[in-house]
Amino acid sequence: MALYRYKAIQPDGQEINEVMTAGTIEEVQEKIRDKGLYLIQVKEDVEKKSAGESLSFGGKVTAKQISVFCKQFGTLLKAGVPVASGLDILYRQTENKKLREALEDVYTEVQKGSQVSTAVKNHPKIFPSLMVNMIESGETSGNLDNIMERLAIHYEKESKINSRIKGAMIYPLVLSVLSIVVVIFLITVILPTFTGMFTGSGVELPLPTRILMGLSDAIKNYWYLFIGAIVLFAYLASAYISSPTGRYRFDELKFKLPIVKGSIDKIVTARFTRTLGSLLKSGIPLIEALKLAGSVTGNVVTEERINYIATEVEKGETLGSSLKRTPTFGPMVVSMIQIGEESGSLDQMLDKSADFYEQELEDAIDRLLKLMEPLLIVFMAVIIGFIVIAMALPMFEMVNTV
View 1: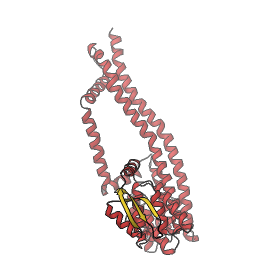
View 2 (view 1 turned 90 degrees about the horizontal axis):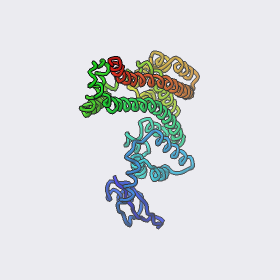
View 3 (view 1 turned 90 degrees about the vertical axis):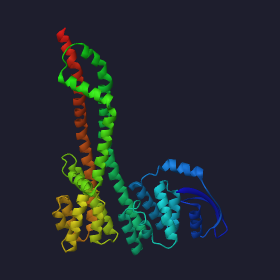
View 4 (view 1 turned 120 degrees about the vertical axis):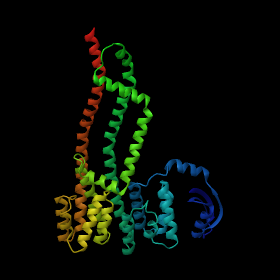
């Protein structure tokens, strides 16, 4: 895709000079004809193309960016702006390259007479299935503006959960990297300065010192093998986790790890209840809503369990009783859902459950960070302490010999 600058005349005779993203000049000409404009001139905008690519880096479309789009689109629709005009306004001001190109295509399809839900369905990597189904429901009910506002709230909440999870991972990751760098520095730079003194003293070196010196020589002489082994392990692990079996085993393991399993339960529950509540408010039938909500939990084990629940509900069983037999969801959320079913306010109870578990997730992450900080510090102290002791022991031996 490239940026093209074109001049054209509108039906009212006004001249416009704008930029459009397209694959070829012929595609630009076709799009301009579809808009009902008379083309005067078109050329590739090299300067703008370079700037756009340098800023976007072909970046991934985040939940936050989807939330902003939904909020702006909903606001425009509430203000009485036609759907096509709203899409035209939004795609022109969107900074993310992938999202901008997708929105431009959606705008073009809507101009040709397609529904918004049909157009966004052509971009599954940009617009999630949850969003597609809710937009379709909004178009059917004539309530698209409210649906876009609900989607904005939903993806704003999702963005906050993702940011909190990533934020929790940064500290231990940075501390771990620093620990590895310090250890490698001590082994490859500091230790060799003592090696000559140790070997020339005639003193038999202690086992820890011999292990450390052997490791130092191996890293200095075969560092490329270590890097290759790490890269190979990372590639194989990623390939395995990406496979259906590996992904299932990995997601299953998350519920068994002692430190993180509580947080995983809360993440899955918060996403499930928030999504299901949003879908039910939008008029999506319960069975379809359950399957969609399961797919956005980010865990294939939970998705499988929720699909089974959907099957049970389809047979006539209540949602609450089906959830009760599922280990993922705790007694509190089951009780809230049962109350919601009995009172006819299931969507509201699901929203309250989501709020509760999102707050619980915040607290769980804070507790996890407070626990991990001393554990990582102790681990780092043990490793560095071993290195210091291994370097100090021969010195004591030399002093005793003298």
